[in-house]
Length: 345
Image (cartoon, rainbow, N blue to C red; front, side):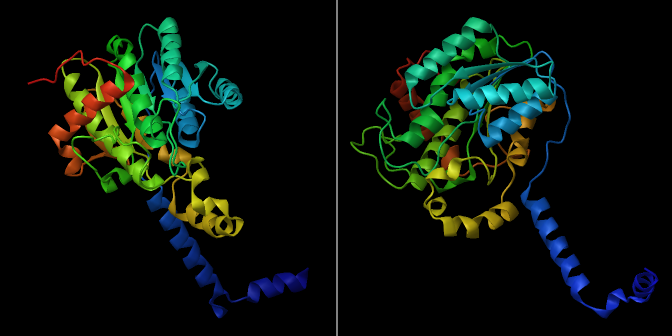
């Protein structure tokens, strides 16, 4: 023991450069992780008395969002889940972590408009008012096919089903004493969307799915931004706000299950360390949504796009008012709803 103490006392940490290399690597990795993690929600506001509906609640971002809202004293969470087993497990977790928060799990399959309508009827039967609707679910790199309703999967699951859900819950959102809030998840990828024809902005008259899954994903995310702007304009005289946000690049969400990269074990082994380094965790990806749902300073903010908890400018295509009106009207027709309100002049 004395020999060991003597050796430690006489050891010269500057005799080797390895400690400095290790410290440098740790510093660089920590800096990258902090930067890529984005800005956390800048407030810790509690939201007692709120009823909040979340789609995709069982996924990575949706799950962490629900946990955070429950910790912030939300009165009741309505979880739209495609998997009943995952929904039940999440409910148990939320009840355990936040006993004062009511949690309700309802089946919701965005590939079916009938499922969306059943979900809405259940929400309406239990809740006269809804304080926030978070349209969080989505797909990416989905194989080319048609949903049972006849639409390209990215278009229906990411946009049309949520569009229908939002329209049907407008009365409940309008009754919120706190001001109803709609938060639509888009993505940075919307800026890469390619529009085939202004006369057919949703590609509804195509006879077969076209383009890659990445192109279809970008197209659906652009449609979300465009339609959200018009809905925000039409609800300007109410206390209901509509905003979009990007969660950033987030790992651990299940969205990449259809990606070609994830189909090969060797590719997974090479990819996962870089995903950990350069992508957000689901909790980090939920931070912008948390702010849009909870921050009282945003009670009058509508029609905007947020990233890393801050408002950002839209692309030129997303600012096209005529195109946005076309998308909105096409979406109403696609989901079988009449255009009962006209845009403000």
